[in-house]
Length: 197
Image (cartoon, rainbow, N blue to C red; front, top):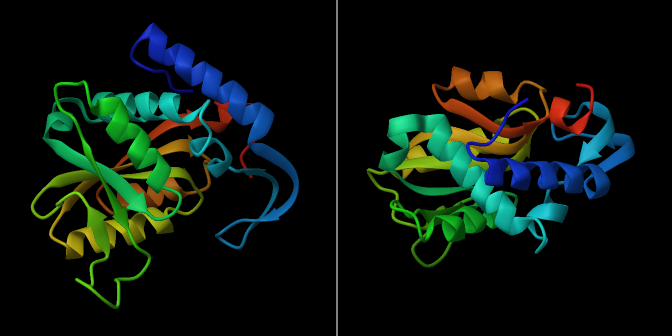
């Protein structure tokens, strides 16, 4: 189990855990992005796009990045990830950071580069030569985050970590760490009372 750095943030985290349990965990027969079968599915998009949860998600993920990276956190200039799942999280973190000493910008990584205009794959904040953190709602294999990392590196950015709201404990952490990145998770299966699958 993880915890946030202040009582107020921990209260946010506990409230988010309760919302996830009540509204974002679905039981049944599901196929995950990895192709594996699962008896439950955590649908975080339901909450990352919900007015009750998004502000807390921004505060929690900002705290996770800041505490998880320690003194290196001050060198991070932007957060984002592969569209669509990371977009609302990046916006929530950006908004949560506005009144802090080190506000963060947000970026979006397209699944493929645009075939018109400037032909960009990374939109938003200028990431060239900058240290950034990739965000995800939840990760099964880590492949979506690693696709974002690959695109960011091609753009000249320096991704240093992957931060997820919910760690499903299905191998993503190992894949991210094998790629030389720090793995950060705000909530894990123990927090949600779920068994790994």
